[in-house]
Structures are given as C-alpha cells and as structure tokens.
Length: 170
Image (cartoon, rainbow, N blue to C red; front, top):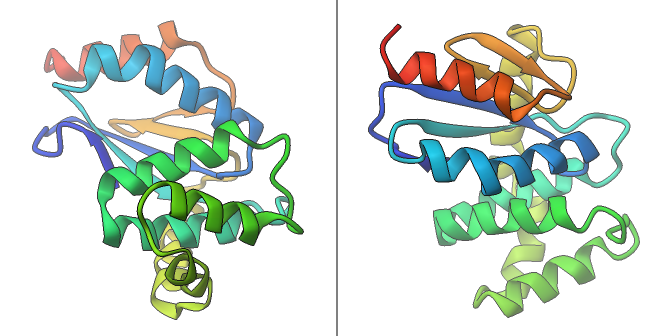
C-alpha cells in the first residue's frame, strides 16, 4: 500500500501496528503535515508489523490487505479508521466494527469478515512482519527514509529534514 507518489525514487517505508498509539500519532502527523508537504515527491510504503502485545492488530492488518483488493484507497482509509479509533475497538467488537466500516464504505461486510480467514492475506502480513524483523524492526512505528530509522516517537521536524534531504538528492 502506497500513499504519495508511487513512481518516486524516494521511498519512506513505514512499519506500523494498527493498534499502536504511537502509530496512531504518526498517522495524524502523516495526514496533517507530511503528506501535504511531500506527497508529490515521496512514496510512502505501508508495511504491517503487528506486535504480539496488541490483541487485534494482526486481524486489522489482514483486513487491510482485503480492502486493498477492493480499492487501495479503502485500505488506507481502514488503516486511518483503525488507528483513530483505538480507544474503543476491542477483540470483542472487532468483527462488528469491521462489518460496520465495510457497509459504510460500500464493501461487502460478509466478505470483509471472511477475509480474516484468508491465508493469502495472513501470509502477506507475515511477510511484512518477517521482513521487518530481518531489518531489525522491533517497535512501531518505524519509518525508514533511505534506511535512516525514525522509531516510535519523533518529531515532524526530524523526519521532514530527512525527507527534504532525500528529495533534494543530497
């Protein structure tokens, strides 16, 4: 899943957990400040890194893969929705929340729920996770800008300086 300019040579690889408060904070920063400034110059690649301590993060990542097959924008919207509603989504209401989101966004709720059991979506999430582990990722979000890591809590100024440098070719 890519936001911004998919044809850009400049990549920001985002390892995120869809149940992580720090990932939610980064999502806000991405929407409010980073994308408005860098969307034309940078490809922001989303990778799933569901942490074991979060009891519905893996399910949310799997569903994001399903929504990507419906519409890439819907997958991003689901990620945004999950991260902005951390305070009330629970393992007990996850499927109900998922169904309501799907219905409100024109997707079939039954297909969205069934996707939770789809091995291909689960395998895609696992590939992202293993790739992250191989790169030394342990916390979310971790954003790599030309392999420079920004981990968990960082400022807009810190990451934007790195993005500016990468887009200026320095």
